[in-house]
Image 1 (cartoon, rainbow over the protein chains, first blue to last red):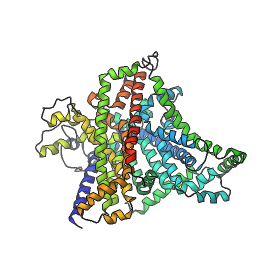
Image 2: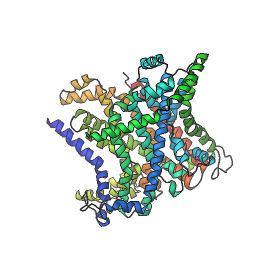
Image 3: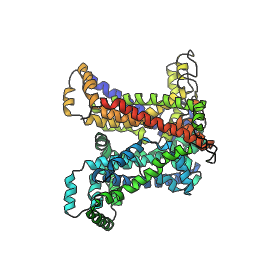
Image 4: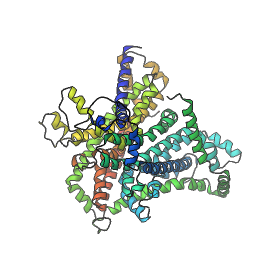
Length: 271
Length: 347
């Protein structure tokens, strides 16, 4: 190993440490006693791990309920995004019909329009439908997105046409081909789409803030900001809550990363 | 990265459950396929199938993105509060340009975009290059760099608030080791140039220190994505590049500049366009880092729209600002396209 390579390792490791330092600090602080957490010190981890902080956090605010809401909403959003983008992606990649290019351009165009810029009419629509303060308001608008459709189209373009022709010989139509043969073939991309859909929904803040008011309808992100207002001075509990909120997304990422990091993202952009 | 057998079992289980969920019973699919087949034979081609497959996705997109675009514009023509006002034409737009707060939030957005995009692109390019050049611990290090991206901005922002806390935060403590004066960080409305120049530059010039902290936060929070995308770009380069890279230092720089960078230009372009769009719609980090204080020096356009809409109830006015934001994003995207498209090297 030459000097240059050692230097590169050193820089990368220091950078990685700085990147995850806030998380280490968070976990450490979460299980300190309150006086220890408030101290200005470089000591990352507690002298004695206070595991009961965890139960104290769940007692201080209804995080159980927040989690139920968040996981239910994100799970359903994830499922529906997979379904709609599989179908639309397949149609854009494999079917020939008039207006295909125009529709595809419109889909790409809607990628440019951030949800944050059009939430006002959406709010009006949701209240007119009577969905204010309901799960529908938090799920339905997110059930399709242009980027996922685009990614699935790229994935289906990568499947050789012969597969379809062969399946066709055996009397397989488009729908059965899509769900029986197509889905396993595009699995890596599907995992990517699912991961991003779940994270996007789980981490969303603006829309849940606007369409829910009831405490029982709060998702974890809204609950956490509210908790900051209530328990801002109890730093250890605040960090404990942050740890718990971050945990599902990190776990999901670790489980899914094998599938998406290299093949999926790379192939999605080059096409 | 994780060699444990259990993990791979769980991954397989989850993917299997997902695939199973998507296995709509065969009979329904078969039935639908037969119907589509019959229509196809009557000369409709793939059209019926396309309608069935595209309808759910495009319906949602149309209902919640495309139609609202038009209705945002329509709503922006009305005054008053909570959608009860009279038709005022383009007065909301004129009000916006006259409003000091609006111009300030536009300026904040511009500072933010100019801060986040270049730094995070350059940083992630070199980190990805480094990760691509090493073998050992590559997966582990890459996961570490990607970690902030998957975590919620709200939770991470709470950590940063504590680290930047003027009294108990670690940042001021480390500054103290080097003999530097403690700063107010996220609570500091004065300009960063003012502080760095020791007061020679007026406090109202340039981005405030609080805004710089938000920019740093978002660079940290979003870099992982660009790193992974750049890494995928490096990995897809032809292997001859790797062979040629075994030359001495000076040669390697020229290689990076004249061959690797042009080959990666589509990736760079993608990240630039997506990054600018995302930077314009940043909300979570601003909200979570500035919660409670409605300070003009750290209020971007989305926060401004949110405040006008949610706190004051000026639906028409907020819509007008939202239309301006949309126009800015669309214009910038097309501009980048026109300027940079010709310089991109596609294989």
